[in-house]
Image 1 (cartoon, rainbow, N blue to C red):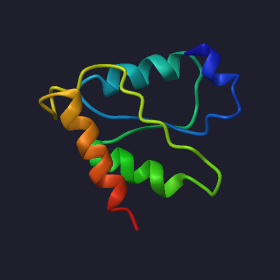
Image 2 (cartoon, rainbow, N blue to C red):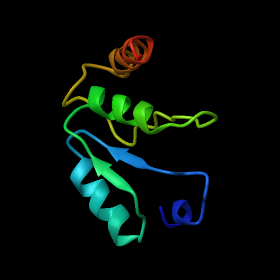
Image 3 (cartoon, rainbow, N blue to C red):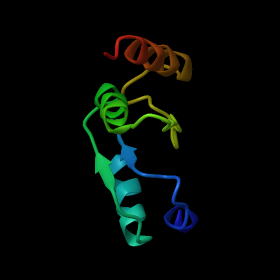
Image 4 (cartoon, rainbow, N blue to C red):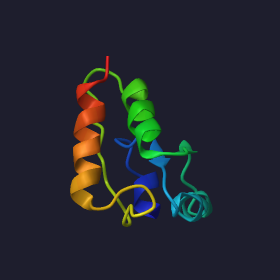
Length: 88
């Protein structure tokens, strides 16, 4: 994660799920700034969308399984599509 700090293209990292707090702590210890932990996947996607400016990309990059919220990666992907399609 230390390489992320040196990459000016990354503006924000949003963590969610049962591993969020430990990944957040790791990122803080690595000196990475502008981090958030949110309670669920929908909020993470919505927050990312609200923060994104014209020309930005939002990357969904699961670092672990999401079995605390979804039954499979397909279900998580379908939910991502649903949320994005319903953004205003």
